[in-house]
Amino acid sequence: MAFRDLSPEDKQTILQHLEDLRKALIISIIAIIVAAVASFSFNEQILAIITSPLTSLDENLVVTGVTEAFFVKLKLAFLSGFIIASPIVLWSFWSFFKPALYPSERKYIYVLLPVSMLLFAGGVLFSYFGILHLVLKFFIYIAGDTLETMFKVDQYVAFVLAFTIPFGIVFELPVVVYFLTIIGVIRYEMLAHNRKYALLIIVILAAALTPGPDPVSQMMMAGPVYLLFEISIWISKWAGRKKRAAREAEENNGENNGESDDVK
Image 1 (tube, one colour):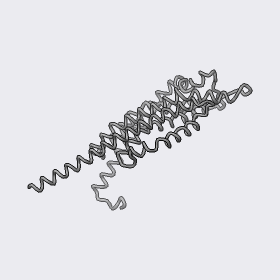
Image 2 (cartoon, rainbow, N blue to C red; image 1 turned 90 degrees about the vertical axis):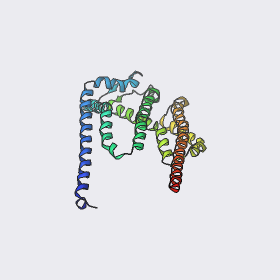
Image 3 (cartoon, rainbow, N blue to C red; image 1 turned 30 degrees about the horizontal axis):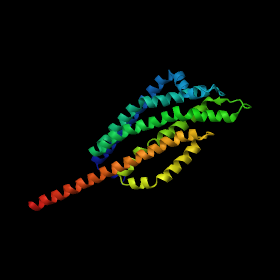
Image 4 (cartoon, rainbow, N blue to C red; image 1 turned 180 degrees about the vertical axis):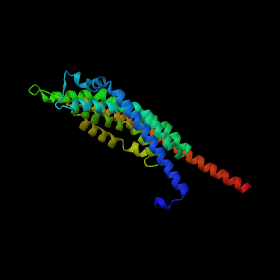
């Protein structure tokens, strides 16, 4: 159905939703820009945090382009600004979506959203403090004594972001498993039965993502990920029981309502 074929009330509703979405976008963009401008004043401190795993190995970064340092610090300022402004961004979009959700759906959001943010932050911090140093040490070791290592600042920052963010995504596994269990896509029994295959996949991915010469660095990644998988199994089991209990309660309520109608 085309927009012109809608009734005046429907058109007004759609226009109001678009206006609310526009306000949410404007508020989010302004918050990110203000936070980014404020963060740019601390660009040296932010860059020092990003580069500390490398400088701790007595390695320095180099700049090979006229604007390279400026754009790297600008990128980090916007990234920091997005992180600082994320509560405002989430609040503005939550205000937009909240009226369209049922109370039960809002309850899941209240729980899953903070947990998701904590898990993502935990994955990023774990990779930064636990794995990144070993990976950098390995690459410097591979260069050997005959090659002089010179790391470009823009490539290094891009590498750090590309390395840490996937860890944050992987750490969302328990939340994803819980959601898929609730909607009936997976079951606890399926996850428990395929433990050995999950372990094999996790070890292979750890070997590919942590190219250290010893198995220690690989296990530092594979161990927490497999622990998350085991936690996800129990979460799936709990979510499945909760789903069955809710279904049985609905069926009992339906039967009680039917008996009440018969009595009447």
